[in-house]
Image (cartoon, rainbow, N blue to C red):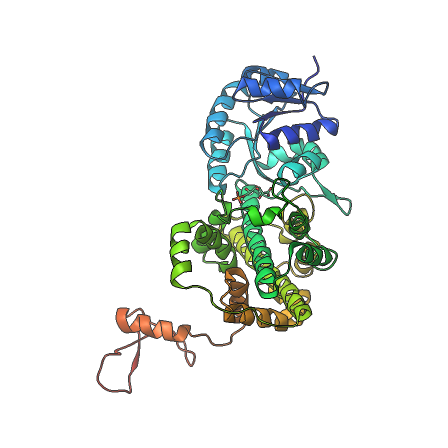
Length: 479
Ligand code: 6PG
C-alpha cells in the first residue's frame, strides 16, 4: 500500500482544508479524528477519490506513514493536545515528528517540546493563519520547536503555504514555543487592527451618517492604496451584504457583543509580563470585553444619553482624516507588536528575524497587508531598530498623517464617540516622543509615601527626600 507523507488528526474545517490543500499539491495524507463518524464522513465526502487515507486508530495512522513519521494535530488548544501527544508517544518511534498546528499557548509548546524531545521524538508548534480559506488555498505558517524537524516538514509546509513575490509565507521561526509566540502576536495585532477598522466604520456612520453603500465604496477605495489589506477588503465585502430575510444590510442586524478565544488576551498578558507597552493591542481586548457587558451598557445608555447633534462638517475632509488616523494607528499597533517580539526574542533566546516575520505575514494570514513589506525593509536596513516608528519610512508616514489623525480624534471625543484604539495609539505616539514626562511626579509621589527613591537629571545615583519635613526646601540624600 502507498505510504502517506504526513498524518493529520482533527477533522474540523481547518483540519480538513489543510488535508485537501496538501493532497492537491501531490502529498498523500492519512487522517484521523477522535470521533470515527467524522473520519468516515470526510472519507466518503470531500476526501473521496483523493490520496487521503482514513484511519480509525492511531496505530493504523502510524502504520500508514513514511518514516520519520510526521503527524499534525489540528485539535482544540489545551488539554486535547496533551491527550493526543500522550497517545501518539505510544505508537510513534524516536525520530518521528509531532506538529501542533492549533493556536496553543507558547508556554505549553515549550513544555511539550521538552517532553517529546525527552522521549527521542521531535516536536513542532506551528502557528497557522488564514482561516478556512487560507488553510485550503495557502496559509501563512509559523513553525518553531525541534530544529531537526524543519528539513523534514519544510517541503510540505512551504509547498502548501501562501507565496508572495515568489517566496513562501512559511519559514522556520526558532526554538520551542517561538512559532506559537509569533502567531500569538499576529493575533494580538489582528485584534487591534480589527478594532481600529471597527472604530473607523463607527465614526463614518455617526459623524457622517453614511449608508452601507457609501461606506463600502470608501473601504474599497482604501483597499487600492496604502491601506490595502485583507481586513479592509473583507470589511468592504461585509458592508455590501443584504440580509435575504429582511432586505436590510446584514451588518445592522448583527449583535454587537464580540467574542474572543484568548490569543489577544495572551498577547496583552505577555506584554505586561515582559514590560513592553502594547496598549493599543490591549484596548482591542478590552473593547471586546466592554461590548459584552450588556447590563452595564444598558444602564449607562440610560444614565448618560448621548445628546450631541451630528456635526455639519465637510465629509471629504472627515474621510481623509479617517484614512490618516487609521493608517497612522495601524503603524503604531505594528510597532507595539514588533517591540513585543523583539523583547521576547531576547528574553527567550529565540533570535527572531523580525524582517522575515513581517514577510511571512504578507500572504495567507488574516493581517496580510501591503505595508508589511515596509516593515521587512525597515528591519533589513537596521536589524537593531529600537522601535518601528523610528525607521525613516514610518517617520515620514506618521508625520504625513499626524494632522488628520489628531483632527478626527478631537472630533470623536467632542461628540462622545468611543475610540479606545485610535486614541490609545496617538497617546502611545505622543508619550514616546515627549522629552520629559510626568513620571518625575510619579517618582516623587512614590518616594513621598514609600521611600522608593528616585534618580535625578542633574547627577547620578539614587536619592530619597524627607518630604514631610515642615520646611519647603528639602534635602535629597543619596541612598
Ligand atoms: C488566523 C486567526 C485564527 C482565528 C482567531 C480568532 O490567524 O487565522 O487569527 O487563528 O480566527 O483565533 O480569534 P478570536 O476568536 O479570539 O477572535
